[in-house]
Image 1 (tube, rainbow, N blue to C red):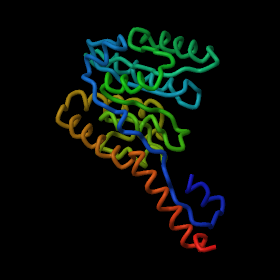
Image 2 (image 1 turned 135 degrees about the horizontal axis):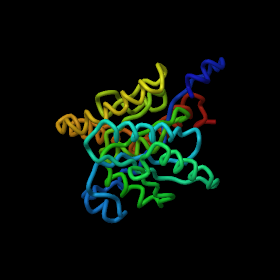
Image 3 (image 1 turned 90 degrees about the horizontal axis):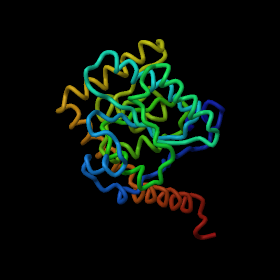
Length: 238
């Protein structure tokens, strides 16, 4: 957004204060217990998407990814889609897409979950996958990092603010074509499944990244900015 404002010709100073996460709510839950609470499969790898089921979220892309993985991988891999849309035709359209791709047995739609259950589903999952290209921040990605999930997402300026390629996840190029992008996206998933050491490193780095976005730290940054403005414009003594 800062870049966009600059492109529009805005010359005033711009400070970025991102949304923060209340990390106190992210208390680790053993994976099997989290899966049992939400009645999710325990016999495979769980890829997770959380978000509104809107066209702009590009969820059909993820269904194509799981379809590709089903064809090339011997691993049992599921895609968990958490979210809803007031227009029920959207959900039905995604279910039809899963059937068309012959992955209705691999795609699980949970519908709307309250926030406590959303946190549980992060701990039930293995990798967070994200295909949206319309985010201004992408708070769910930050939540996934807070639960120690490596993130695999399409390359996007908003997401790259906190997902660092090969550090706490992978950013996947998409401008060179859909098929190539899906292959790279899928290959990165398989890489994490086959390399436990790399997975653990990215998971630990994800947790460390999230600490920079603790709501207390973000609030302190906001207060400091206000104090600097008060001093800079002599408002305190006015």
